[in-house]
Image 1 (cartoon, rainbow, N blue to C red):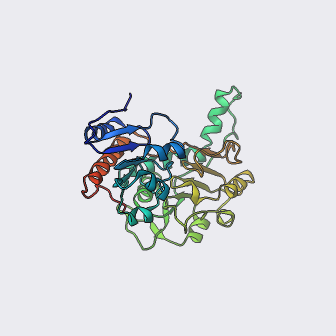
Image 2 (cartoon, rainbow, N blue to C red):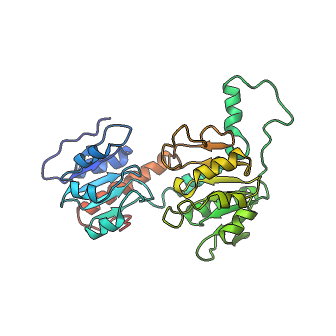
Image 3 (cartoon, helix red, strand yellow):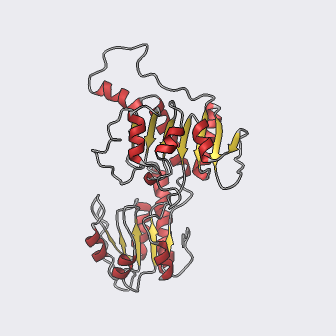
Length: 329
């Protein structure tokens, strides 16, 4: 569908850096003179700077770096940045606040979809699903083997949740309820999770040393960037599995590749990398005990539709000078 939408000059101009689900796109088109980037890949830096000129609002993705240079290119009419994501690491929030530009995101609606992907990655990594399937598809499977593709049991094991927020709690409830797992978690303070009797707050070192599976759900900031490196991976059990649906930057990916290649941990499942996409020559890519997805945690119809509605509502409210439905700053 072509979303290029000529509109009366009186309507506010906006630039949308990628086509959104139609439920949000239509809201934007009904209220704004919208230019939508038509390609699958994001606009280049020069294309972005040219496209934002004179805009009152921008719809952006995590792949779009929005900083003072972009604000300058847009000009004084820019009132709002609506990020189609929960995270806002791509936006210079300090500079936006200094200039009085509202920033919105799409929180809370991704919880279940992301938790489900974390579980899917855990199952895939613990049971060798990708390399086993590849063997069938490539014609290398010859016979059933009593000692072939031996994985890990989940029942009664310990899951370590790094940062027990909404998504981490949803993962914990699924694993504790479905597989009877014990739950260790990190957080700034003790938390109570409905339906979880066996749930204990510990520091990161204790969590890594005592968990059979570790699932990362922390924000990416100066304190968490590279928080799982050589030292932390060495603390984990050799049978442990590491899952990341948070941000790629929280893991030292070279350290993880080394740990997996030398079987210092059993496996890893990643929905996020740094950068995205990860260079296909990186040592992590192609390791049989590492499954990497293309950042699809929120990729369900219901979730993406909900994100698109919030994103559109944020954009329109910001242009109108109203409080955003989901404001970051």
